[in-house]
Structures are given as C-alpha cells and as structure tokens.
Amino acid sequence: MLRTPTGGAGSGTATAGDRLVSIGTVLNQLRDEFPEVTISKIRFLEAEGLVEPRRTASGYRKFSPQDVERLARILRMQRDHYLPLKVIREHLDALERGEQIKLPAPGRRRDLLEGSWEQDEAEVPAAVRLGRAELIAAAEVTETELAEWESYGLIAEAEGGGYDAETVTVARLVADLGRFGLEPRHLRAVKAAADREAGLIEQVVAPLRRHRNPQTRAHAEATAQELAAQSVRLHAALVQTALGIRLQ
Image 1: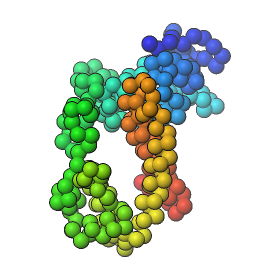
Image 2 (image 1 turned 90 degrees about the horizontal axis):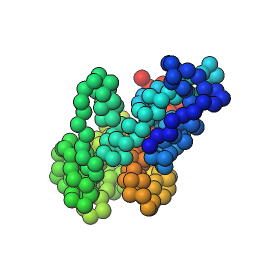
Image 3 (image 1 turned 90 degrees about the vertical axis):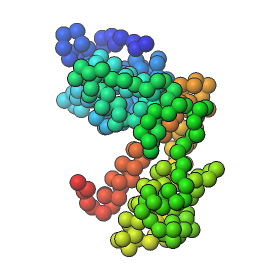
C-alpha cells in the first residue's frame, strides 16, 4: 500500500491538490510494497522513458502522485508478471488510451523464442536450448566457424548441453565483426570484459536470490536484466568517448 505524501519543504503544486515530492520521498512511499527498490532503479526507469517527473529550475526531480502510482504499476508488472520494459511501456500506453490490457497470470514468464506465455520454472525447462545444427542454421554460420569460435571461448555450450537463445546473437555479431578483419583472437578481450561485468552483476543480485521473500527472489532476474542493460549502455558510451565519436 502506497503511503500518501504529506506536505514538506520543497513541495510544489502540480494541479489543485496534487503535491510534488522528491525522489527520496517516492522511495519511502514505494518501499513498503517494494523493499528492493532503489533510487538508481527509479532513475533507470526515468532514463528508459517509463516515467517523466517534473524538474525544478535547479534540476531536481519532482514526482506527482500519478508518477508514484505509475512507478508502482511498473514495478508490479515486473515483479508479478516478469514483463520486459518494452512490453510494460506498451501496456502503459494502452491504458492511457483507455484500452483494456491482458496480463499473463502471476508466476509466468515469456518464452524468448516462441513469444508465448509458458508456465513457471517448476513446470517447464529453465531456458530454451538450441542444438548445434539449429544454432548453425539460425546464425547462418558454418560448422568450421562455430568450432573456431568455441576454441577461443567466444561461444560455449550451456550447462547440461545445448546453446542458449542469446548465443545466436553472439554468433551473428562475431561473424559481422569478422567481415571487418576482427578475428576470434582479437575478441577474447571483449569476452573477458563481459565475463567481469557479469560477475559484478551477479554480486548485486545474489543477495536478492537468497532473500527469504519469494517475490524478492523472483525480482532478481528483472534486476539482473536492468543492470545488464545499463552495463551495455555504459560500455557503448565509454567506447564512443574513447574514439571521440557519437553514434546516431
């Protein structure tokens, strides 16, 4: 249950009766229902365009009651329905247009390859796996190329056999970079950096996965996805800065 904001220093008026509050106050209001939420999380959702707080002349964020309720709805969609941010944005846009939306039953997750709603982990495999021939066909590469990439550690079978769906993307990117003369041996440093970033993210989400609250444990995956997205954005920004370029 969200706490209703009360008056205080620095508050402004959005409309009659609507009081604007700081990001710290928003955090306190949300934490009753979402104990794992952080200021960084709220800023991330703002950066993704899911919430648009007002700004004071000095640049401070100010949130209306509608902003706070929107944040709560976003967090519920992530926690209870495992929805990615793109789908959440589409649902919010539909609600603003007055349309009805249909959410998957709580405890279900989206299958990345088929696009269908699957049962929870107790009823289906933990992840979709591809066979070797399926990976080669999907990525449009050769057996020789795949074997070479595996020898350099760029691609590896998942624990228990098979390849994760994301491996198709990795294979395609490695192939594309190869057309510019970047060989697998050149990309080992990129793989090592990715492994280090993954290790940092794992350190953050590990306590969530061990939490006694099952909702907090379930939220660990969404947190890992958000951290991964921010890590990718940081990596891209650092590369652009190092090269002195701006990507369009």
